[in-house]
Length: 229
Image (cartoon, rainbow, N blue to C red; front, side, top):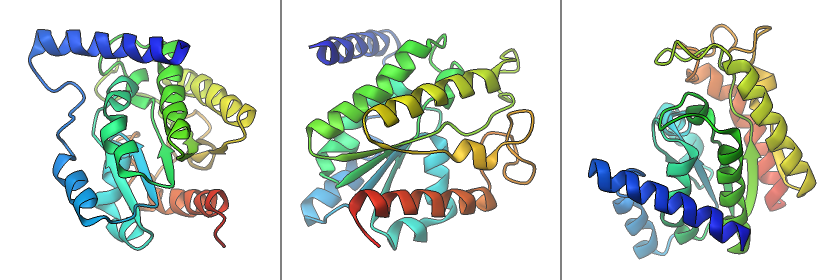
């Protein structure tokens, strides 16, 4: 019941925003054709990566990692967890994958769609995980990547502290629910809580060498979750 109320609140909020701005707030049509093609071909999808520009950029940077492993990317640049939750049914559940990887939260902290409220961000991610599990889809939660600052939000001066607090809460949730938590953050951060030199050009988005750190970490977690060697 609490999950339904929380999702309903988010739906109402986003519908209100849509009515005011007359735009597709969650970009529900972004993957419409790709999803239709998958369903019409009756292709079996093993893993869906739900995320933002970090996921979208990953697919563009190393498409073979996805195609060769039967992974499907559903990242949209700039999106917050509220937007991801709205499209979760279309971009994840409807594809009937075995597993979903959720990487979300950095754009909430950057206030891309409004003031950052840690409670709502965490519960949006939890809601996606709950929806997946209720539909027989396994879940892996991943950490928010390091960020010392946001190039488009210079006024936010405590990004590392907010990232660390959200990651701590996500790991605790994963541990309490016997889910795998993949900690990209620790593997990629510098002493100040930002992205290590050479892993990103803007301090937020990984370059190819950054993704090479992430790939074995997530692949090992996927294989463990799906019982593959």
